[in-house]
Image (cartoon, rainbow, N blue to C red; front, side):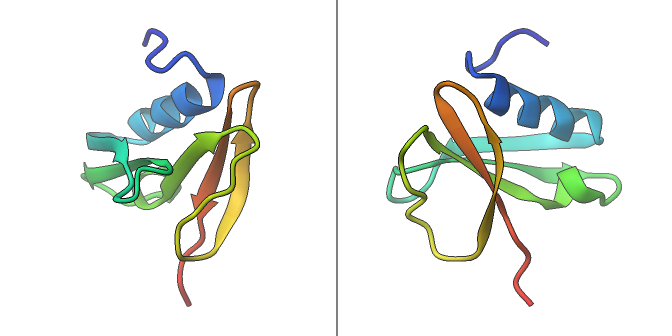
Length: 87
């Protein structure tokens, strides 16, 4: 796998989702364009990486999406948040 985005956090999330067995992957901007969403849309089996959604924003920006999130990864350009499951 070559550098896809140029940032270690985004590429690491993509790599981990793929290694977890994801067969169909989604990455695209959120409706309001403030974040990049990363998630698996199809896998033969469920696990943490195939069921989770991740959101990437430029380092120093705030995540502008409804829901509960936790910081997941940061590098010199990007901060990634993990969407926490709704109870």
